[in-house]
Length: 333
Image 1 (tube, rainbow, N blue to C red):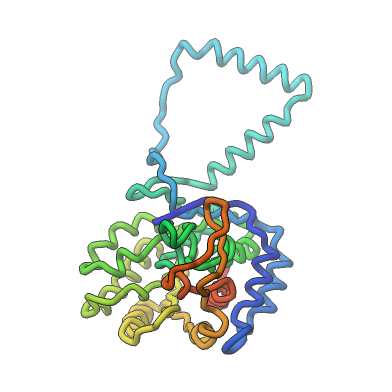
Image 2 (image 1 turned 30 degrees about the horizontal axis):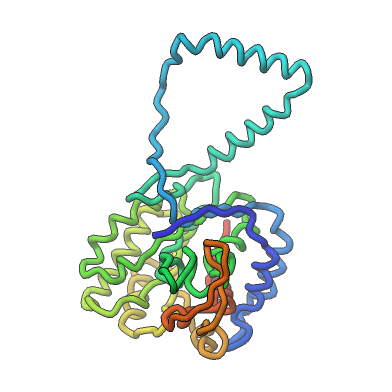
């Protein structure tokens, strides 16, 4: 699983990409023009803040009440005297900086869950949790893939998660946090229910949006799929009772038995199922990456795709199409 923070995504780029998505092939998405206009009108309202799985941090503990050692009293008096002197001489702007820092800290609560840094949802922020496989996020694979974001996107900002997160930043006055979780280990596990405990800590009553993109890596242990998907959605419903949950159809080589299991879980819990028909209809002609495509890496360099599996993933237009299909189903309150 990977995670990484970024600030101030470029909304104009997002709007252009989203308006282009799902227009080249298949049926045009009806919300593209409206989405671009909405982003332009509201982009000033919020700064997008995302947390993508990558770094490890020490677990945050509840602040304990401590008595200040007597030895520090003199230094406190000195600090107080300096503060009073600065106020009298008009150097108070430093206080404003301190206030801004305190507010930012209060809005972002970070902790470590199973060795991975996470942002814990808060009522002060709009909190988005995205679960998925390599279309959503992927480990750096030496010689084959060079970033932690959706595979085959030409840069971090152009995968569908970053596009959705950027759009969200223009729809709510709250700061937006996005936590991306790798679901591949759940896909390939023989006992998928045993894996669920690894994910439950990322949700709470303040989680606002959850998207689930999965299925492409499921090639075995299919006899339990119906219950597995139902239990996955049930867990999220219980841990994030106020979140809007969206289930994406498969984006690569869809399988009828997997899609049926997804639909069954969605029906059981009233979760919208996002049809990927527009994306799939235009995939080979417009939305598939290719050998020889050049992408940016987390190392700051440019790299050429030479692996067939990587090349089978969505290009920038494909990522924009997926983002638009997701956005068409989001309700921001």
